[in-house]
Length: 263
Image (spheres, rainbow, N blue to C red):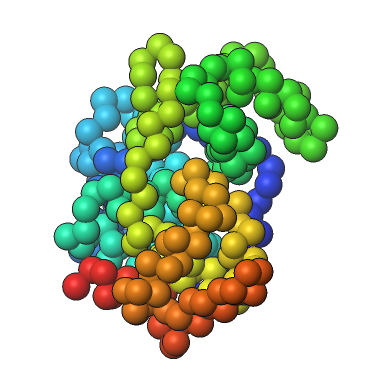
């Protein structure tokens, strides 16, 4: 499978009507694991209420969102994702893989997290307000003209749903006021992303400078720690002296790594 590093950067308002859908995503991939095709699963969602949603429109929107985020996403190797979902790995690992791909498929989520929340986190602030995000969206209108086409109501829904999504994935907490609640990030998640990047022919400099790790609120020093731990576990070779870094996969592939952690 060919991975695409560049993602579509047009902001979509999809999250205004489709939240994290973690449970439904697990269900869809459980069905794929039974060798059902996507059309069969769609019929089960619509006719048999596979997602357990009363409204027909809600079923359609949920299926469409999951298909776009994961099944039809050129970055996602569905074979690998099925193996992860069907494994005995802790749900926190499974859901953080989903969070990673979800964020990469929804540019607006990716940018709010890596450009705004990450900055707020580094500043040591605890509370994230709706106004913080609304102001960020306003600041993005020069490069994202699509925002100007959204009504105030749509923007409000996007902000509310973004905060709810980040809470679902465990990075925020609170009902009225949202606060940071950044969880422990298992090494499997970071090494998974590293192997994905190696498969995309990224070099160590590109990996260390990738904004993707900001999705997990990790800085460069954190990432170096994960690389050291991954090397100790034998997944790859990593050495560095001052500003000289060396990373060698020693022939290990992303698929082989997933096989190793899902045995």
